[in-house]
Image (cartoon, rainbow, N blue to C red; front, top):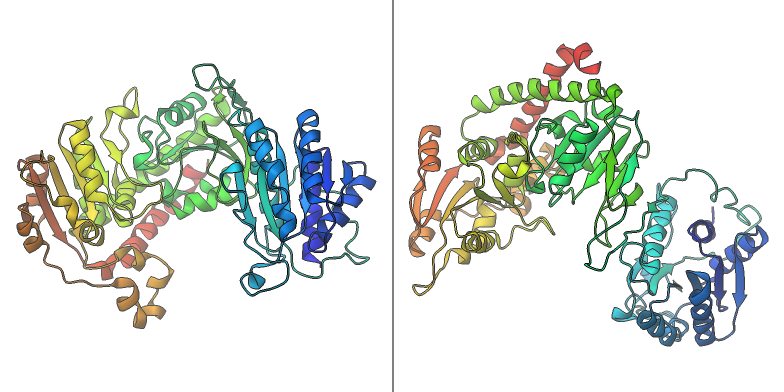
Length: 574
């Protein structure tokens, strides 16, 4: 298969579906796959093609078309051809005209080698474009065409200002490998991609904006009769909980979602998603916020047999699997009597799983999950917990029961740096949170994140010190890697040095140097005492754990949940 020509067919056909009626083409060799596909689309009556010899003229021709005919694409080859579009792109940026630039480029292996007509095209238009993407040369990998369709949906939405009411130019830099021309088997193809439901195609609802700048788009109604779950990622807010309760849907809420509460919240969702009678029967997912913690959730959002509805108030939206069917500003649901059994099965399974997991943790001594469970239990409504990335946030996700009441906000507030999920800056972030809130703040952190931001404990004598209780789970290295692929026994020879990274740091001595109270806790009763009665000012509780047992502990947790639910399979399967 000629992957370049086939991908070009998908691109052109999807542009037609997204409402692009006119394309302006300037001739070139590297853009040949697009040229052939455009000519084929004209023959199928999908769009009109305008050819110009000069790229600068092509750009302004497309600009004029876009002023009166909606989004218009302009296609060029690589090199200076792209640069000649810059004046038209600048005009489109300042005038708010939906101009779609498709520049052909050499594949990545030819860049930086002195190959003819090859330069850095990726950010050639700088801040003038509303959206830019450098698209690798097609290789025929699974899901490639779905990804292209999804990318085009996102790009056209940016060009038309569907989510921002700020239309303007966008740039897709499309790499193509030779051969660049179709053979008899390839051309013309893609006659079927314009009809029906196609994987990767996303419907982007407009986000109406009133004069105050707040969203005013009508809520999209969710139809009845589908097994639906609500996924609440970081920053989701109470809307996720309200929708779950409105529709009678299970709520799978991360700790920092702001939605982890109410009767529909499922605590052990990540252990239940692998069950065929629960996760395996999900037909629709409604996503709020940015889900970042759980591989089972990521796998669910990537399933092609699941309708993914993303609720996002901003111009961007989370969809790393490029599988969203709908992106909208607000949704509403009507109670579905047929869905009551679906929710009841999730709640019953969660209750049984909680009991089983609790038994394993009780018998395992002081582990990361056990510490997270005790910290959550000791933290009252309205108090703030800052949680580090890596294992601490996942341990809390595994062990923190949802709060009940009129709003998830009645429980502790969880703050986590999940924008990029780095381990850096956690102590400094917590200091800022404590100073900004004017109250006591807890921190759950691993040893590497603690050492990474040790300077965050440094507060000068002329400064107001934050009220912080820092709980450090010290397993002398990178415990998270024990749970990932590289932690498998076959990699044990190399694991310690390049993943485990033991440090042997004396945390007590480091705290003493910063004038911070420190206590090394070795038993559960003392941990509970310190959590219930924190010392004033800044204090550190250090719990030393054994990361070499982490992989086995989590395997036992999964096994006991599976055994518990399999024992009474008929009850949970419905």
